[in-house]
Figure 1 (cartoon, rainbow, N blue to C red):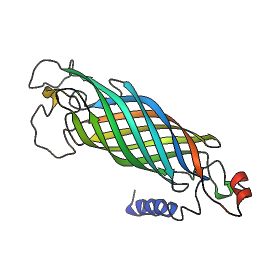
Figure 2: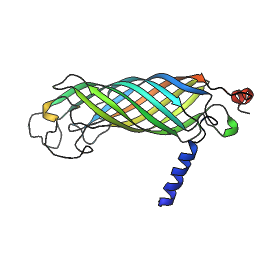
Figure 3: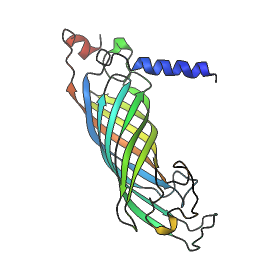
Figure 4: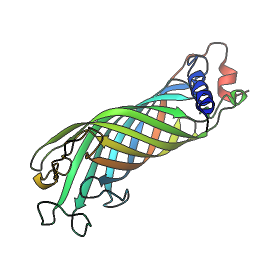
Length: 234
């Protein structure tokens, strides 16, 4: 693909964010809950994103700037676990180590909808089903273990949202969350076991989340002289 192609995609994304008050959903906000699974990737698991499945729960608040862009805040609890038994790579400490830890994260992400998202305003070619991508920043805390972990997290992911009816949205989202630290396991043996001096992007821990959500719209926008269009989409 040429650089011109990526420039066009960037221009389309930027244009989609213009005039949010004019081309915006009927409601400004969403609030709801989410539940799903979490997995760990780090020194005790470097290859499989579906190894060591554990539960995850959370709450979500979303501001819909327009049909394409949304800003989301979430508060999430997840469990992560791992075991070095049976791994091919050898650790300096020799014996197998296992861990099981709770993680709490609070953060925010920007979301970009690939289609203009709404169940109304059909004359604007809106869709009630759209894939989206997300990226953001958060803070993760894992208490207990040999040492409490407090780290910046960087979530990146993709999702799918569906407006099942007026005010009610269903969603599914997969995200990978990069931690700027190497102490997620909470055991000394797996905290930088090889003592490698590297950048913040290498030899650090990750965790993944597959979450299902239900949200409710509120905060209607004022649309004077446009009540018929806002309810019928005609």
